Length: 184
Image: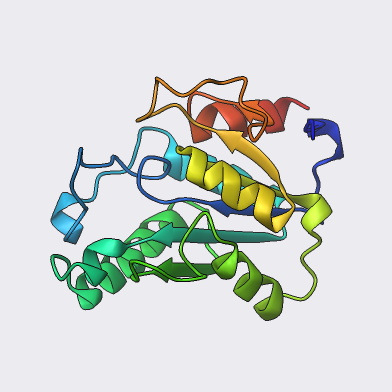
């Protein structure tokens, strides 16, 4: 599924992974607290652009650090509260955040459970007019399983074959994608 940027308008939905897309990921570890959370450069500006274009902006993130007992649920919830507030202060928005703390679950990406919950909570979402942006092939498979377009960010996985059939487009960062959307 190729993505025609000219067709993207206020009827489209944007799904985003968190770690490695919105914020720096810790190598072989988890972001446990707000003090460890660091936005990628340009993310807040990108989110402000997305807020003007997309009808829904939804975060879908596996947070198995909770399931492993190394991250506290209340810390993840505080990260999400603070992240949302910082994005809103920059003119952006997040309409919903779904996270899966379980080790095995139909909600854990690449399974589509979090996306299916979003479709239930936001019945106006049209999967034919939706994009999933992630930094792993699991995120791309989630997009395929949900039936949406996919954009891969090689922020943490430079070894991934960018010609993988689950990837519709590749961008270096959220701000690069946002800049292309503004130019269309």
